[in-house]
Image (cartoon, rainbow, N blue to C red; front, side):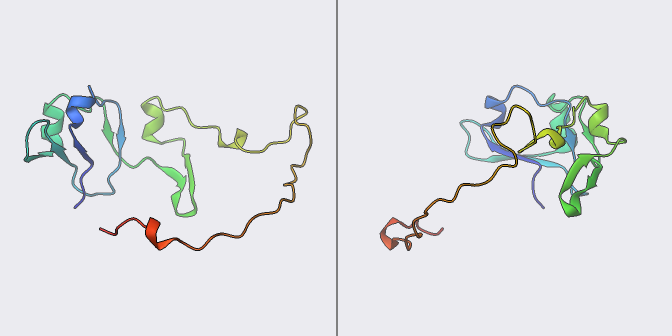
Length: 129
């Protein structure tokens, strides 16, 4: 079981969470907090989290992506995210696009000389936990 929200001093740093769309793939909604100035963890069930005044107006539901298995994370028209006021990201307008304002089209990557990668230096390696 993984926790939905986990954090150290989280409630001390974040005033409120609200109007989120939460999808935890059918797993229990739990929150693990490291309370400021305390050594122990506080484990909260979803309803206890709501009782603390967090996530008012939030919805627990599938976001209804078009095709997440093929990395298409656009929202379907019946997505609950849209009902919460989420504005879809215009992915069709992102990246390199043809435009009269461009100096050249199509974009051609210049040929550059690249140095070969250096082998890893064992003295610079981070210790593995």
